[in-house]
Length: 233
Ligand code: HEC
Ligand code: HEC
Image (cartoon, rainbow, N blue to C red; front, top):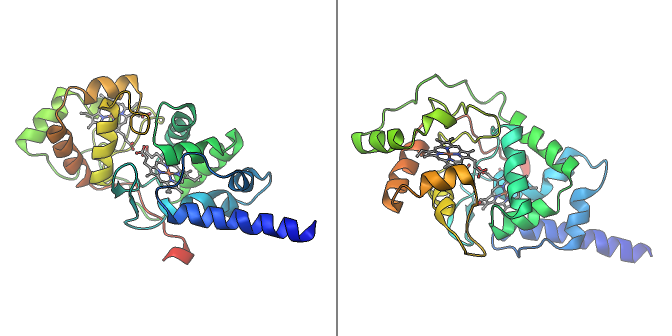
């Protein structure tokens, strides 16, 4: 019994690290890892162990289904993190790796992890002003106006009108572009986001326009952070 238990533990750790290192992890997380994540009473370090290998490494790139930087989640509100994780769980967001991970989390795990990431950058960010830190060029100003982005994401794109909406200012440009394109993508099993609000908005724009919007948003000051774990520094 004892050697078996040890082997099980080792497998769990191997899976967790393996998953964290390989961006193209399979859609469903291995059961050993799922149990490790859901272990009741586990410390917050144990709960986020599965996340830090991607979300807490500066510049970490995902390579599947597209190459882009992994989004910063430290500093998003707990309500948005919860909403996003639930969208991966129920399939509204199709990203296979994040689906596998979200489905392995209990409701309690989601609540604990979301609160943790909301609070993480507390001492690192100064509150942003009410205006974006840079003015857009004329083209981008027109695009922003066309879909009234600020009416939901806030005048500085970092104070959304509802805490379940994301902060987008200063997020990685390549990720913003991938996310915006995903709202336009339908009937692809591995790519796409089914969201009534952002779907209708993203479909009004060409990919070149979405890229211009993404580059502008990413160039702004941000309340979002990558929070490196000591062991990944
Ligand atoms: C293998 C790398 C990897 C791991 C491990 C990982 N993520 Fe992710 N995560 C990603 C990628 C890539 C995306 C972007 C997915 C997409 O395009 O929708 C993402 C997206 C997210 C989002 C949505 C961000 C946004 O701005 O909408 C949240 C929230 C999130 N992850 C939370 C977590 C949590 C919590 C964990 C640990 C339980 C975790 N992730 C583990 C790679 C990872
Ligand atoms: C009516 C409100 C509303 C408007 C207007 C709006 N958004 Fe959004 N946006 C949302 C909501 C709600 C979400 C979260 C959707 C989800 O859960 O996937 C979102 C998500 C996003 C995301 C994904 C962020 C992430 O971290 O994954 C980006 C990027 C984005 N919006 C950019 C824009 C841009 C650019 C505009 C203007 C062209 C815009 N939004 C206009 C409500 C809005």
